[in-house]
Image (tube, rainbow, N blue to C red; front, top):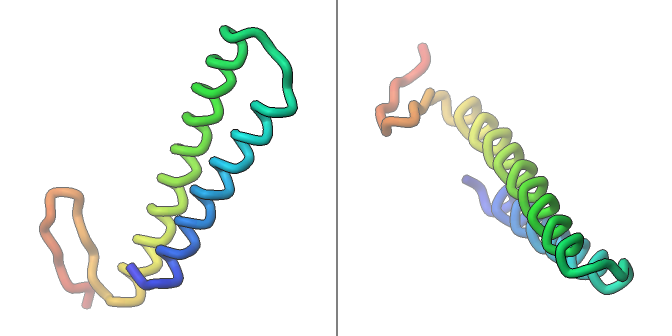
Length: 78
């Protein structure tokens, strides 16, 4: 993965954490509601991070001309 893609994913992750923290600070709720919000936001952030990773991996694969499989096998695209 290129350095730019790593920086992008790091920025998305850090931005998500900041958003969650600000949301908690400015939304007075009960402890149960806050925990539910944290869990939901964490799930959404994880889903976005996975999506960004998959898109980046796909771009790298296309750029390098290599199709990677989850089991670690690689095959050159002709």
